[in-house]
Length: 108
Image 1 (cartoon, rainbow, N blue to C red):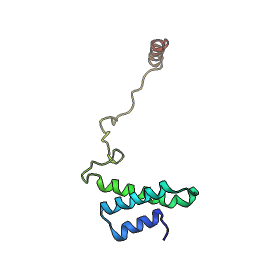
Image 2: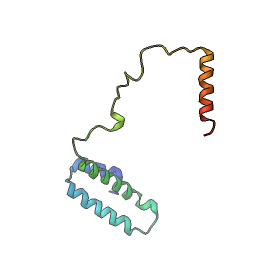
Image 3: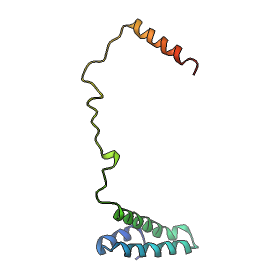
Image 4: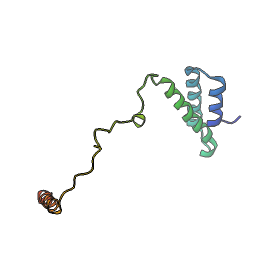
């Protein structure tokens, strides 16, 4: 069987090796890759398997009680957006406010 990410995933699923055994395989793959002198395509499967196994090691070492990722957190923005209609300003008020801002920032 050739080495690939698919075969590495199959090995992890079927054998369910311990962390030490996975680290040994990673070491062998790193050695194989560093000693390879042929075309890059010929070793690509080993590179993909190495990445998959390294990711597996990282996920196994990660603490189990990690807080959810920031993208998973639902923020309560209820107080930020009031349930009211926007304030309506007269055109002359808007114009004066715009001119005041323009004058304030003209030197920037």
